[in-house]
Image (cartoon, rainbow, N blue to C red):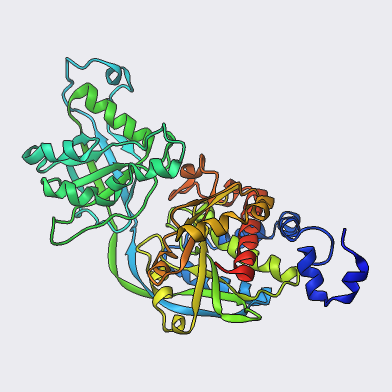
Length: 474
């Protein structure tokens, strides 16, 4: 028990340090969690942000989100609220996305095995649910009609050689369902989305259909960025196929031995657009030039309003600062919330922030990113030295008040990765992930999919970590 006669003899700030809280008798981490879960302010912010709609970085909605972020940070009473310019690619999905599985291919009499017992091949033209992958070119007027050839790995694609010429390559490698970490499963399959068009073009394909990156059997199409390298192969259209339709197409190929698809897409890339990162802070009382960043990316894909990806990360960063301010805390080092732009389509916002001239007079102690959804927080991953990992791990008793049970060496995040080039320790919030890829990059990523308490716990975890970083450094 604290001797009250001693407490009366020391400065008030020292009393707070001894108590480890703001004077209520309850530990500060528990008070932070209490504010987050009582107010559920992060969810209210997320409702406002998602009401803007889908926010591709070059869209008018993204510009509206920039204004929303500035207005919100001003209303919260944050300091140095401002924007910094970012130039982004302007890609447009276009009005037409359609794929039709054409009837009339000859049946293969010798089809046997599990695939032969799958869905019955259609007796008439059948619509397949598709969406263009981000960055894809469109099809010529009237679309592309071609025979489909299915592959599940790069070796099989390369073995096709000239037999793929003039055909649509169907890349049908699923995310491995046996992986506990769904992000690990995503990493095992997403390369076909990113590089599939380029690699298929090298063997003469005229387009690619890629199985959507999700572990669910669903009618939703999941988009995402794909990449061309002009010097390596011609550009061909690339579309994601809903997993239920991917299974249908695969079964038709197994039964009939052949299938033809007509693909029409109207996407284009007119040029570039000027937009912005937005930020506000609690300025450090002792070391204002030393900065702890909390961030998420305010852009989303265009199929849905990006509630988990990454509206959740943005509002968690904002709420973390709001909680600290509400508790009357004055950080030793500056704690800054940054709403990065363009994570989805190339990471221009993170690069622009790291290399902006304003950074010349700042030292970034650490940067923390939330970009794995607004589910229950479980861990932090630290991209830094072993001593930095151990320092963050030593704060587990405090972080545990928000549900964090482990700190491991690992990746920080796309937006904050450019800061690591100058030695900044980057840290990623890791929530429970089993349902994340049900929503990722699709129309299902909506506000109703986000639990307010789980979202608030993530904000509390970021607030506790930011406070420890500000007070103790690394």
